Image 1 (cartoon, rainbow, N blue to C red):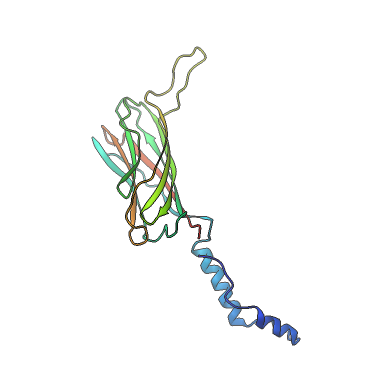
Image 2: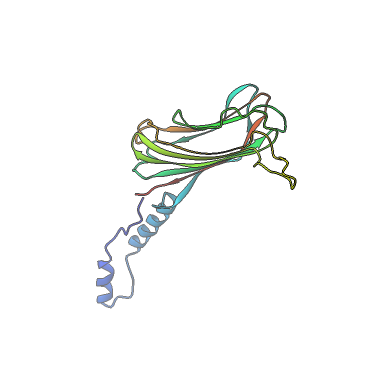
Length: 211
């Protein structure tokens, strides 16, 4: 939504020309203020609007891939080419020797998967990225994943970090349902062996419109 004047200022110019100090019409002032308020409450072009903050704690359940969080992007949110969403997911990994995995999908397309990371003992995960509209049925997605502790070595050169730690960056250009007329889901999933091997603790999603 673009911020624009509702009324031509000619009427104000004529009033001033006649020497009337009464100022612009009251109903015009009210409408202009309502227009500004409506734009701020809606979406300002080129600025990110936070559309989701979720701090619920959700962990995997037993063996298999489980949904940790789903955000449904309403139809028409990415209405023009160049519109995009940014996302952040963060959580914890249990302090045990179980294999663990996280995965992110958009409209059923896999944006990123760590694969099963063997014997990752502890730590956190952080997944960030963006999805940009290329057309009504295609997007460009880029994802950055930190999984587990970074590799660490002591002064003697001995490895002290968590085994299986991974840092991943990837991009893709999948085909999706028509974004103008369909709501689509952004889904974070986690997998482990025991309950709460992988726990989502934070989700943040922002939407930016470019026209």
